[in-house]
Length: 513
Image (cartoon, rainbow, N blue to C red; front, top):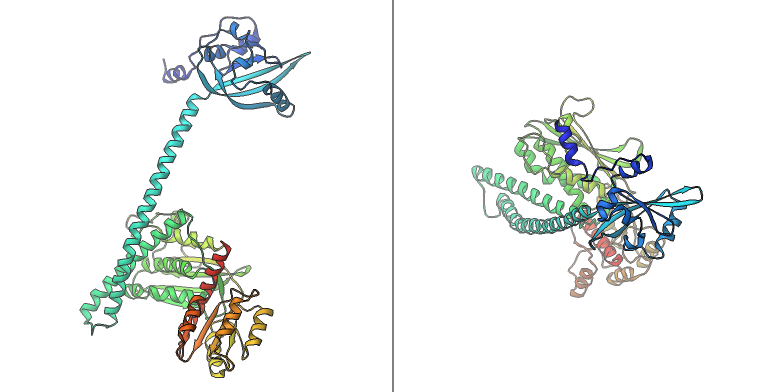
C-alpha cells in the first residue's frame, strides 16, 4: 500500500460501507459524509443517510419514524416557519443548535437547511455537522489567548516599570556629567574630558533606547497621546541637531542645514516630533563614516503645496535594496553587526503617521551611488498670528525683531480694550502682555481674557521688568502663563511661546474629556 493510500485510509470517516443498492438516489445519499436528514415542511423525517445513523446512533429506519424536534434541541414551533421564511430569499439557511443522540448525549451541531420542490411535494434537506472538536478547539484557543493577553500585560507592566526606573537615574547621571564638562566644579583636563564625554555619550545612547522602549509600550497599548501645537519646523530641527552634536563631533561627521529659517510651521507634538528627528538624524550619524556629512533640508513636497518634506540625506553605508521595505518594522536590523534595538525608525514611522504624515526612504538617494535619504512628509499650517499688548515701544520692537524673523505674524497694540477687541474679533493665536501697562498692572486684563467665553483658551506670555507680587505669581501659575524677565534672549521667548501653546492645548484636552 502506498503512503497516499495509507493517508487516504486514515482520513476516511469510519462509516460502514453502504449496502449494494440499485437506487441511484439512495447511493448518492449514503455517500454524503455529513449527516443528512430529509423531512417534510412540518418536520417529519422521511429519510436519512448512513452518516446520520452513525452520528445520531439511530438506525435509518428509526430516524424515518422521528421528527426534527426530537433531534434538534431548539426545534420549537417557530423554528420551521423561520427556516421556510429564510429559504424564500436564500438558497440555504445556516444555524447552530444542540443535537440529541439516541443514548441521550448531546453535541453542538452546525445545520445547513435547503429546500427541494418535487411536483406537489416539498422536502427540507438538513445537513448536520458535529462541531464538538471545533468548539473544543475554539475554547482552548480562547483560553490560550486569554493567558497570552495576561502574560503580555505583565510583560508590558514589567517593561514600563523597568524603563521608568532606569530613566530617572540615567537623567541624573547625564545631568551631572554635563555639569562636570561645563566646569561647574573646576577645570577639566583633556584626558578627563575625553572620559567624561564618552560616559555622557554612552549615557545619552542608553537613555535614547530607554525612551524608545517607553514610546513603543505606549504605542502598543494605544496610550500615546499627542499635545499638538503650531510649531516652527526649523526650530524643531535645530533642537534635534543640538541634542546630537556630541555624537556627531565624536564620529567626525559634519551636520549641515540646507534651509533658511523661513515661516514653516506644522501642527505637532514638539516632544514626539523631537523623538522622530533625533531617531532619524541619529541613525544617519551612526551609519556615516568619519569625515562624512549629514544634510538636513526643508522643501515643499512636489505637487503638495501644503506638505513639507524634511529631508535627511547622509553619505553613509546605505541600506541594501532588499531591506528598505523592512527597516521601519519593529526590531528589524540590517546585517548581523548592526547595533541598537531596531526601534528608532519604527517608532518614528508610528509617530509621523499619528501626525497625518509619512516617511519615505531611498538608498542610495537619486543621482548618488551611496548613502541614504529619509524624507519626513508632514502637513504645513499657516503662520501663527501673535498680538503684543505693551505701552513700552522698546519692548514691542524687541519682541518683533525676535519673532518676525522666526516666521511669526506679529501685530501690536497699546490699550487693553483694543487688545480684547482684537482677540474677540480677529483670529489671534497667542497674546504677549508686557506688564505693567500704562493704565493698570495688566493682571485684570489677563484674567478677563482667560475668563471670557469667546477666547477662553488663548495662550498668553507675560513679560515684566520688575518683581511680581505674590498674588500675580499665583494667578499666572494657576493659568499656566510663562513669565519672562527683562532682558530676555530670543530662545527664552520662543520657549515661552511653546510652553504657552502646550499649556493651552493641555487645558483644551482636559475640557474635552
